[in-house]
Length: 319
Image 1 (tube, helix red, strand yellow):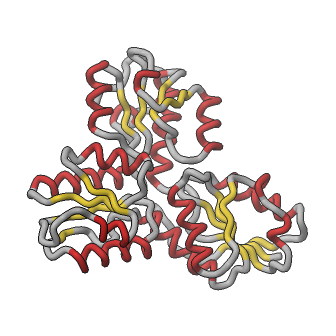
Image 2: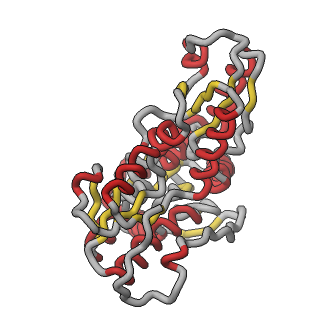
Image 3: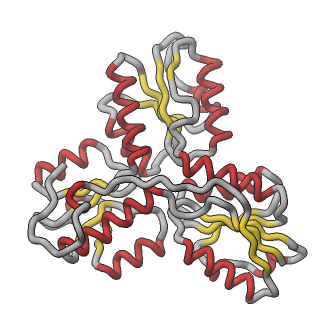
């Protein structure tokens, strides 16, 4: 059996930055540090950081006074930032810079008097953060049908932004529905969908041209990982999202000659290798890597963490 590995796959620059913020904070300020929401949507990553001394919470009320606080890569609403400031919590913000870019873009559209549409999935923390950052009502749509149901006049001055982890094809369909219905519309096409998401989706499409089965390594609550699995299904091949090698079902491999293997942007490479080991337990495996985009983007850490990592008593400033 041949295993073809997508290129690129796994961690993106925003995820690397977020995890490093937690690791360096633990080194510099000592355990515990408190993280609001999972730093990234991968249980293995979260559990490793918990073993190092990170404490993950869903509400700021769970964080003791004075404790170092980290906001997750998905971003938070302005009300969360204000609450942290009012409590004097020392905060480090691990929001992905590409998510922050969407926040700024939405605010600019609203400042110009436009009604804002957000293309995204209800309940996702990135969507909740973006809707809470804009400072004005936001209309959330996920499908072309949602666009048809919007209670807005067709000549309303509108603008749209998108969740960064969506399917490029699905998003283009929603944008087309907005353009077909509304006469005064501004937006960035699909450029709000992050480069890493687009690269991984393109790699999966290439993979599906030659694979009989697609395995996506990632967590169930990872939006970008779910999109990769959905693309495989759209391409007409059996596609499964698995957290690690323990979730591989040998029955999936019946009659399969080529397995396509990729990982969502929050899944570490050691989990990909774990899946390969699980495949080897079911027969002889030849592993190959496809050609693809080589990513070399890096995002800067917060200023408080750019110095050599050493334990200090000065806490980060509230931002």
